[in-house]
Image (cartoon, rainbow, N blue to C red; front, top):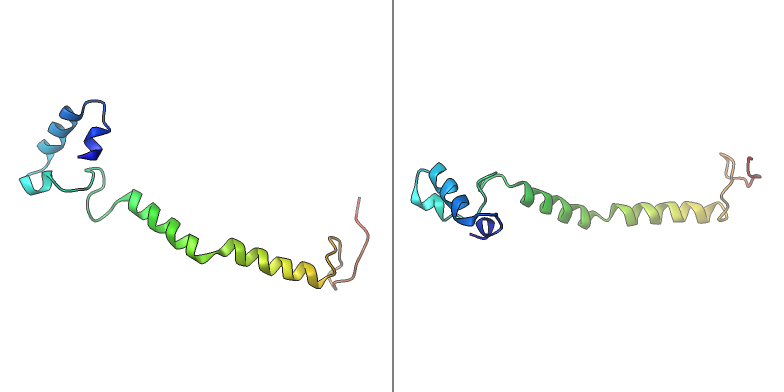
Amino acid sequence: EDQFNLSLDPETAQKFHDATLPKDAHKVAHFCSMCGPKFCSMKITADVREYAAKLNDKEVGMADMSAKFAEVGKELYVSESGQKREAID
């Protein structure tokens, strides 16, 4: 119902939607007709964002690199062996 209310003409949108569904039970389902109940791009997007938020990859990566930076004396310019070197212009 809320999807139809977002349309420019909710009544016509409801009629077009109902005309494409064979059974009355499908006409009152709470999902949009674009994807259906088993596949919803909006739900998948929300699930992926939630999953990624739990991983905290950015924070873990920053903590790892921060530790490495501290190991080399907090110097930006170091050789491959970890020795301090001058900046290259």
